[in-house]
Length: 422
Image (cartoon, rainbow, N blue to C red; front, side, top):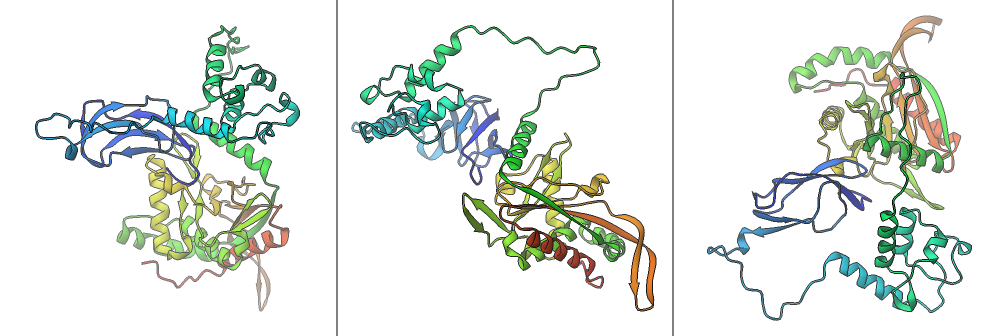
């Protein structure tokens, strides 16, 4: 399901138990914190049983359904007899419990509490496994509550089953419902955030907490590019059936500048800096529902301009049709946002974690500008654009952030207007 994805939510079961399916048929739709996607069946056969339901949260690698595979079913339709000495394979929950018990037995009699909860929050030298602590955090169980749960594991330690039983009993106690939200004057409407908006909210808060955001600005003369695009856009559409926007031109300039300043193409892991060799540029795309998503152009520096134009259009189209796959959103090393599409002049974009910088391109507007010529300075009408560069000041100093921004500006202002797009 993509880089760093540990679980997903089942949105829809697309096939019913008892249905015959073919290889590559989509059998269920799932959602991760990156993308919604359909999961195909890897073989021909009959779906005999679902092990999950809609809205279940499922760990990556879990078994979600049972199938009868055509190659394993004899012509008579009867299942082959199981070998007499076949070893029974435990299910996932049993296996987790076995692993937890093995872990507990391997711990010293007086171990230190696991990091993540302060020592003084726990009772004495009581040990709790990482699994138990993780469940406690998710369910907002306090240290005193945790200490009061009777344990059935080794040396009376609390096991996964103990804490789950406690949670079930706690939830069974009637809770006085919170008062329903009401409008005081009838002029306000309460709208529940959808799943994607909740994720965006969480990611933005995390990014502002993690990175020391600084933003630099520059004004770029886009007149040569505007004139060149006006000359070639009709021919490009006639030969390719697609449009040439400013976005691929801007991404090309960013990719070139990253090659010149590779220390902008990094991420931070604790006190270590990880420099990425691949230049994978994410581009923010506005969805019909108003949310944003950031598909990634992998190896963006290896495309020519026509290739970038086709890739940009393809990703934007699939994003708006909700047809992106998990890999389309994974592995980004730097991001851009074309806020000029909304007629915005400039902005201060929020960094996409774990990247360390993001660039926003404002609207291209005609305005009077000073032109330096051998005969002296003149005032002319030029197509100007503001570029905003937000970077993580923990690892990107103002000199690097500013020089990188200036290099992008230089590539755009020195654009080759004689190049062929076809």
